[in-house]
Image 1 (cartoon, one colour):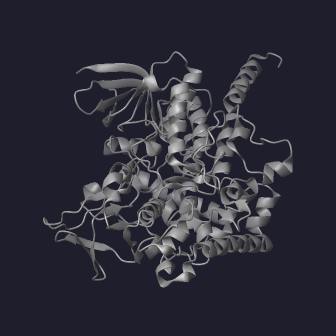
Image 2 (cartoon, one colour):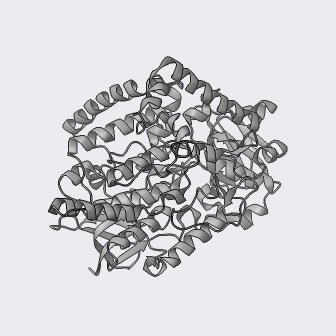
Image 3 (cartoon, one colour):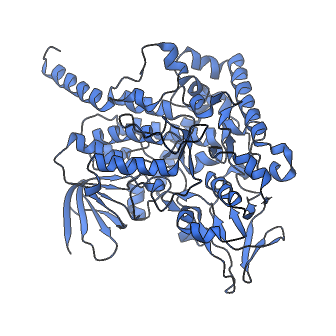
Length: 580
């Protein structure tokens, strides 16, 4: 069998893969590193084939870039939100400027990942077609949280002739979609809102189906708060982070006041209910019975809990287009596809359509790893009784810790029958890979790290709106781990952290926290946690008030790699007894 040997492989060329490769090469500039992506172009979810003209990121210009590489100011809405084309250009220019393009192999799919026999820490990647396998010392598996679509299946008559596509493929179907008169859209995630807007904006009739027994529709922030301040600027402050009930941000007098005193908790609840009220007024759920079906759960506080996820109406005039467009919301489910063009619903309805677009989300893209390896790497639960008992005990202890630190999370506002994890329809082998992963800092496997195996980490599987800077901090932490530049605690300490995170995220974000490493309001405390491990200063401004209330733009974190390197030198000198 032909085999190619390299030092490091990065799987994925989105935000996480590109910055991981660049960071690794900063520490090992002479390394033979390759990036692999099955897509036709660089960019991950923002690649050329996945974007379309009305696709905008749900975050403001200036907040969606690496700390050291400014984004061009083009393709920006009046409210400050960034177009998909601008992000695509940015990522491709970044790859070009840091000489990653020549290291990248597109249209290359990894179909199996395995350990190299009798070689501790080595990896072999088998590729589609007749390409030789690749062996490496270090594997950075950065395929991310949105690269493997969940595609349910239903009974389908052989006479049904209309296309059924996933939202990930909308960009490659634009020409066909522009020529249709009506479409069915399934799902309540951000991709469904983007798809519905795109169709309505093109004068297409839309039947929008969201399950009545699922997690409900996405919670949607307005682009600005009462027209005065950008919503993402507010979310990107450390003051807002204090209000967010984060397990990573529980120390300090203000946090104790907000989360453990009666007055503070009342103030916090009032704040979030007010934000939710502003969002609901902007959306106009009360304008019609049809719009009311998009009101998120739990009613009255959906923004805080983000049970079905949190998004932002970043495209211009989203709600205006929705209310004026020909869109009918159905709170039911599909039961079958019949005849030439008919979608049959659980409530008995029958819809004629020219296209069906499944906005059914994504699961973890761990399919190239065998089930045995998934369990070894913390990607799937171990089945033996001893391991199950250990994690059950850790979960019980973690529940007590979370309830003690964050009492407002003790009782769920949504009945378990609604927010419990459900597998999509289809055969068991096609069930999505949902549920908590057991990774310390959401990056590494405690058992492997404790044994000295520093050969792999998993960036990009945390769900956050602050992707570029989160990926930058993950890349620095992960590469420092691979290259043995930071210490990690004992296995039991890491497993305790894993349990507390998983218990917290399912209590904090309900359905989303049960499926993913969800931290939509908690990116700043997560970044601070990683930088704190690395010895990098987390206070990025000299003025304490500015640190608290001014949005934490990525540029204030510029230089974190150099800060870490300087810290390494100081620690080495201290270990040798050299005066610093």
